[in-house]
Image (cartoon, rainbow, N blue to C red; front, side, top):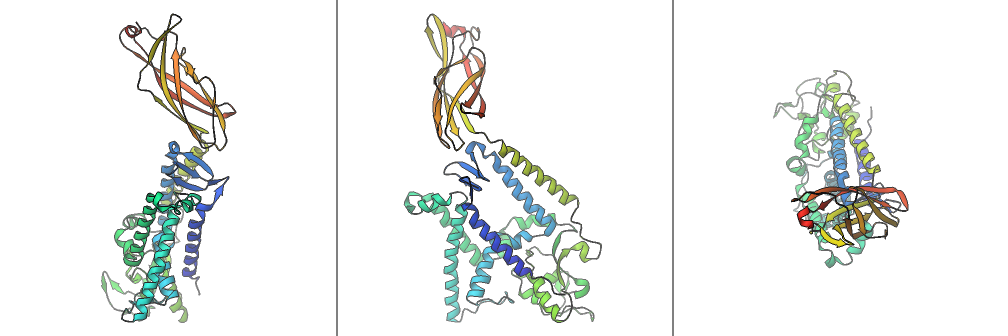
Length: 452
């Protein structure tokens, strides 16, 4: 009849999530982070592969996957993300249960509703100590957040000269202040009042969604709509004792016996509390993590249904697209900008030469040095004047080259208007045939009147 402690399992999940969040910024593959979005160096590192700013098109896929994953989890297990994985909830557990509760004894685990008696000086001192400890942890949490944007190896160098990095220091200060205000003053009100996710999660529920449910058929009716009938059910065979252990332990201050409520985060503290009480009476718990279908004895919970299949298909498509696009990472990047002068006309050996200047910005996204050059595929007659030889770019570096294209041939004979051509350019690494990109540039041939 004993059930596993959801509290122990939940705390274990939270500890793992916290350790993973701290560890991820330090994990690298071949010198690249498994996740880093660096605005300082304008690059994205994902699973050991580096992408330059021009390849940030992967970010929408990452965001879509994250949102779809949370939505899928909500459809299957209710607000389990809110109660088990959300940073807001984890921080509150650290502050309220660990620091104020276990460390200083300001809260009892079995009664989260009893206010702290601040008339006692010792309690005020404990509260101040709890606050100071959380200030330090908030700064650590803010720094941890910044490591996903500023790699730790740079972060610990930057903070040694804070005056040289005001944006980083300001970001840490703002995040830390928010966490201090949120965790110590807002608390669980943040979940019900500010968090936008709580407003949309109810639309993801169906009769097979698992959430915290009070078994009214066994326990008895406590509420008639919004009205509380009494502390204890009125029926002779109703099993609820009216001890309200489930109410006292609730971190969001609700009575689960009232039914599904906006504030419930599926932490299952009430299920553990009821299990403890009912076990003493030799009866199963009255609070379960189950679906409405199973609770009403309408059949087993259907985990495989249209919604879950749809989410599985969407997640697979997004993940596949992400893997395919990341697998097509270019070994080099090239941006081409034409100079402000449309063209230059010269007479060389009695032949009219038309030339145009371009700025080629190369980026070597590989970690090795390569020798680069390019060729003009079309139109026929357009050739490279300079540079006349290949050039080397170190791994991860960029290079700006002034490129001049020219034509000694007559490409157009329009008497009064200039003619635009699309110059198809292939840039490549001479020492690696797998590194090659294609770009288009505009080459303008002057009207015959301008040639004269």
